[in-house]
Length: 437
Image (cartoon, rainbow, N blue to C red; front, side, top):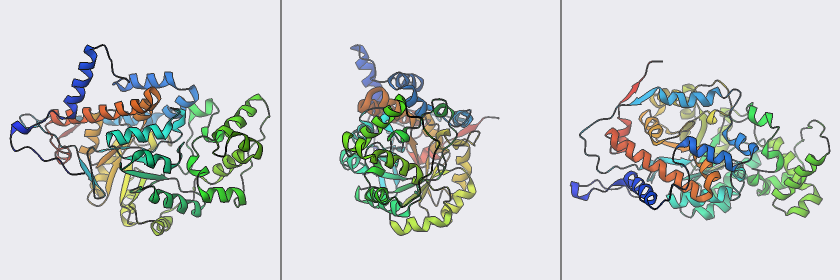
């Protein structure tokens, strides 16, 4: 994608996506057509809540423990104030950014979020179609509801990365990475902060984990190594508490069979769907993972490697020392450690330490274009959008995701112009005021 040329005179200026989107919304309003999904995040969240089951909404919206890290993520943005500059020619804004040698039109990517079937029946496919329409790169979730190959077909030429949860089985890790390469992924994003599942009280109160119902494991059940491991039963299965067999148990078994790719009746009678869930829970993540293991991944692929879940400066410098290409400054949206440092608080020191050497992505707490502006001003090269697009999916399917992406693009474009910035380089040089604690 080529970088837009700046005008040589005011006569060549264009309104930009911000004004175009505003005009589109207001003109439709004259005909009595409100936006397809709420523009305001709180309204969008409430629309999604109404569209989702309590279990689904709790899984997406919830965080760890008392959700103090989720609150800190938002409060962290309030600590920084944008100081607008005046009398600068901002008639044309260039929001493009170069990542790993490719120039993208906007500094956004869709974060890897699993079990999207809980938000909408078309799940990852709807998101991929929306990403293609808006030219926004997508990071395939390792816990997707749809195999990566199917999503790749929907994306066409739109860039994509692959999120990797490092399995107990290195054979499975290698297989997933090889599939990602064949599916056209341009980087591997290793999620480090979920080697154990956080204490998520909303899910625990509902006694609900979607993976135990066969949801969000499509990358596994479509993988030849996983299917081989399933047949060979090479790994010991962890014995869980004895389950009571009742109507609820039967419903779960029916749900498992319906979610398994071999077909309902075959899965129900063979017991393979239940076996797949047991195998998944035993191997999906490796708590023993260390820095030394990264060399195995480098042997598997020449793609750029990004480490997701970095919040400590020392971990960022270790990533650089181990030849990593990029990091995601993230606390997993507050879903893993209750009372953790907010991602935006962690960002400035990390950017100062490694910003010249690593590509820095940012997530956790992004809700508006102004949030994106602050993250880039504090050192991020690009941001990952999470809950907002999932809520758009729940509220309006593919169109809902498109609306959310267009609104983010417009909000950021206008924020840039109103703050006096014409490019991401100028955003990085922008003045932020740090409020007293």
